[in-house]
Image (cartoon, rainbow, N blue to C red):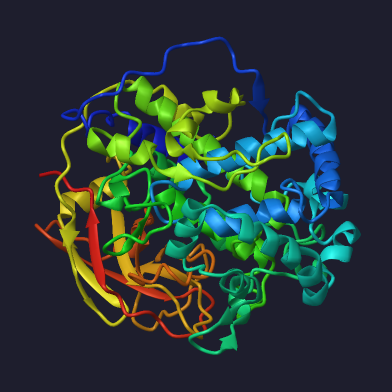
Length: 542
């Protein structure tokens, strides 16, 4: 067992009832074992599922462009409707994966098929089988469709146009919120064309040619050191520790921003949860080449046509598994695992209107509430990383105070933290590690920087670090281009656990408040540093 896991298990022993004053939703009633089990892709069962997965993908590639289960049409569901940066992120993707799983089951001929998951915490590299035949988008089977943009356009755009013309009023309304008033608006995101700039932006191009559709390859399968840090036990456990489904302080929230619809920006900054903002976004980006290939064009995984790459579904199966782990942890502690009060109805009634089912048809109107439980698709997960958090001793913790607000200037923020809080953080004696909430503007226009390193107490002359630097606290990653209609705010807040290497806190003194400097720099060392909008650190005890 790694040191990171031993520490995080110990730190969780005191965690239990930050939401003790709220109404508790009773655990789901026990039932017979699920019909389908999603296995780790590295297991014998997971490898068996990969064989059926490949058969299903091959069948979807051969369906005509106007078929709802065509491989590329399925990916366009994600581009047209997926929520990111809000509290519908997990539930929407659960429905999307569930219906996709049904399609593979039907088209592969394997009635027992269940999506395997890729546990990148345990295996920080693309599983070897995902470079075989149609399980990589660089395979020659994709060439007739993605050999170049002209080929892709002639194949898919006429069918998409027909589909667009058949959409209901409610579907059109959701697309308008997203910024798509016509098929050409949507197609601009395929090509990366920006009407406001009257130019193409290569990093925003959702389409990728066959040869460039995935950066990682069989002879270069590993996640880089910074992505590996973002999926490390320390970061994942920090994302599983919150006991609120949603909290305005995003380090205390399992989910991202609360919004009025899954296609709407929040009224303030988009607040990414730890798991969405770090492991989810960073894995997407690195597979597609953000970093090595800046400023683009990138592979499929960096934008909203990411489901063109079959690794997408294994990546999101693991994200869904972590939601299931968190849910069962909450149930074990008899804490809410869904929004409370009026928020639960608002959350559950949100309409999802674009899914295609395993029978080759459209689902029709459905709601988020249909997908809040794995019971909807009758599956569960074989154990993976994080499972230890489900059964800790249920010991109540002290209530948490509001975060300590800091001051910001240029790309640097300064905040004062009680010395005993820092000492407890460094000794891994806190229920939850100290977390920074960092608000910065989202890259836009011609900006080519999508990722930023967070440095804690770094000397002024340190502007570029490696993942093993004592000052490194992780990499903030922006996934996908900004939807044109979702421009109410361009600011985003990320929750980042502070490092635990004592070298970053060498000036620590037994004083009431310790000065803490947090700086954000372009991850590759090239480009303009963002101007920070806000900084705070918590959780702190009152």
